[in-house]
Image: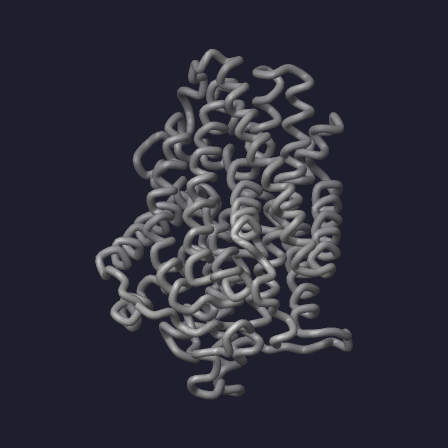
Amino acid sequence: MSSDYRQNSLNLPDAVAMGTGVMIGAGILALTGQIAELAGPMFPLAFVAGAVVTAFSAYTYIKMSNAWPSAGGIGMILRKAYGPTTVAAGAALLMALSMVINESLVARTFATYLMRGLGMEPGGWLVPTIGVGLIVCAYLVNASGNRSVGFLSQVMAILKVGGIALFGIAALWAGGISFEATGGGETGAAGFVASLALTILAFKGFTTITNSGAEITDPHRNVGRAIVISIAICVVVYLLVAFAVGSSLPLDRIIAAKDYALAEAAEPALGRIGFYLTVALALVATASGVIASIFAVSRMLAMLTDMRMIPHSHFGMPGTIRDHTLVYTVVIAGVLTVFFDLSRIASLGAFFYLVMDMLIHWGVWRHLREEIGAQGWILLTAVGLDAVVLGAFTVSKWQSDPKIVLIALAAMAVVFAFEHVFLKLNPPMDGAHDHGPAGTIETEKSSP
């Protein structure tokens, strides 16, 4: 595996670009309307509340990544917290699936913005077709190597962060900073808390950085720095854009255009030219988001394979395990893109991620907090916040779309049952990869 993971192949700007690439691609473009639908007129503040919950979560990942930077970070954290068990393998697979779900979410968002830019109403077979096409292109970029991903992520991140922030400022200026998104929506406290599941999903791209830890220069310091910088950048961008959208459109129009809310808000605020520029920015943001996400999840799957926590088959394909996991990633993302709409994709991703996140915090609190010098109350607060948000989101979805709740429950049951059977038939060696060789999959633990 050492040949598959190149030490120092990603610098700090590369890591920040990857993190913001995933977050901004999914967060502000695909989820603004869905968040507004749940939170009502308070939807811009939902991004702030989501950032607070994310900050508590990020603490665990930063402390673990500072101790053990890993090319499959989430898998490493779970393995160290629970050992080679069904809980660790199942939760890691949930994380990998939530990342793949994110790819399909962003791919469909790319398709809806492209169709709006071409004057077409998003829908029908063109949306999944265009989305799958983007996923295939992202695979080709990833297959070309780390430096291609890192350089392209930096260029696209600069374009989209600067461009989308400029959109927010310009739209606020043109709209006279008058908030139009009032009335309607699920405006109660329950709806607001439920919306945090989607804002957390909008920030979860920071785990992309965790999953590339061993490939980042000076990882014991730069992984944590990259996570903090990425979250801070996204908070500013999300707030700018949320207030800009709310200043340009009433709430009912934001909800009606929830799959392409930025494009819908651009024309009344900035005119036709502004509309086309916004569509162009959305295409850049979503494309880079898919590229960055595929980069991270394929490496996580490769590490889980190396730890013998998931099965692997070459299916006659040449190349390394990393090459094969790239293929698996794009195939699963493509299938999800074809069969699920944006709302259900986002809901499924939120369920998987929140369950996995709670298991990580709980496992680190029980078994590793003293070893890594983590504050126990922060870890337990992260568990509690996730639990409250997950409960509110589940109730909300059960009322509006019970089918996706049942799908999520069934999928999680299948994941853990599958891992239980697989590990029973193929038990990993005790202690395998708890301390991997420096510079390959896992580097040595830093001094406290």
